[in-house]
Amino acid sequence: MMGELFFRVVMGTIGITFFAIFFGLSYKGIDRKFAAHMQSRIGPPLRQPFRDVNKLLCKESIVPENAVSWLFNLAPVICLASSITLLLYIPIAGYEPLLHGHGDLILILYLLTLPALSMVAGGFASGSPYATVGAQREMVTMMSYEFPLAVAIIAAVWKISDSFKGDVFTLSFISTHPLWNSVGLLGLIGLILILLSLVIVMPAELSKIPFDVAEAETEIAGGLLVEYSGRNLALFYLADGVKTFALSSLVVAIFFPYGLSEFFALGAVPSFALDFLFFLLKVFLVMLFAITLVRVGVARLRISQVVSTYWVAVTLMALLGLVLLMWDSQVLSIKWW
Image 1 (cartoon, rainbow, N blue to C red):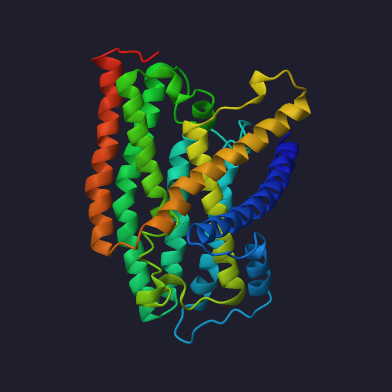
Image 2 (cartoon, rainbow, N blue to C red):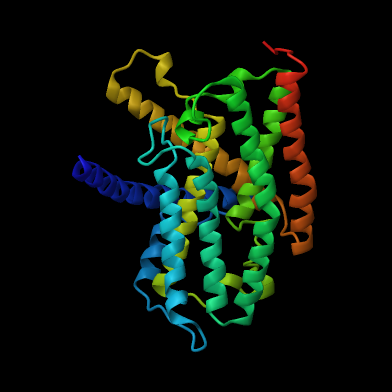
């Protein structure tokens, strides 16, 4: 029994790894193509991220003379491994994740911090003043968005616990009980605010414009990753694509866990294919609105603006969403349908 479980987990992890890398790089290619078209450019081909990774993997990884070599080389491995581990706990296309259990949503919150922490460790270990400044900025950014992120997740869990009985801190349970079906008018507004809070947190989690102050090429020459090259840089590149896909999948699992197959009388295989394609479309739309459109339309913020944005505006938005969800359940009972 244990041997069968071990075999299933190992083979599933290998499969999820290839799945995550393929779709992570594919979405990076789509993101760059869309961003280029919105700026009236042709842009690179969709397969360009695969070429970039292949080129980096063929190059030598250079370790700076003043670096802590073991930590400098270990950081990109931890970054990629933790990003892939995230996907092991997230339902894909409505199907149960490979790993799940009581409190896995809390575990996911901690796993989300590991890629950023590994980049910080790698930046400090490189011994570069540019990377050190980038690592300090990344730590400040993390402290800024963690609180509104926690408020948004807790608000969603609280609403689930108020409407359904079960293990509410398990992501597979949340994904089978859509939030939108159990709220009134105030709850609907509250959920929209909670969703907006998560969408605004996503670019900072992924170090994308306007919250990419830790890398800021024009100010600190790439910041955290300035000393990385070759295979180590390729691992960070892969981790970025995988985490983008995982974070978009997490938003889909919490807020949009719907499928299309229930509306059609299809067999098992066509139903799976339809739900899987619909899942990919939802992930793409989340990435488009949370990352691509914001990256193209907004300039980079200063570090002080990043802090004030998350500690004041986004935190208040998430708290207001939580209050509206509470009022919807406990004070008012206005139904919008």
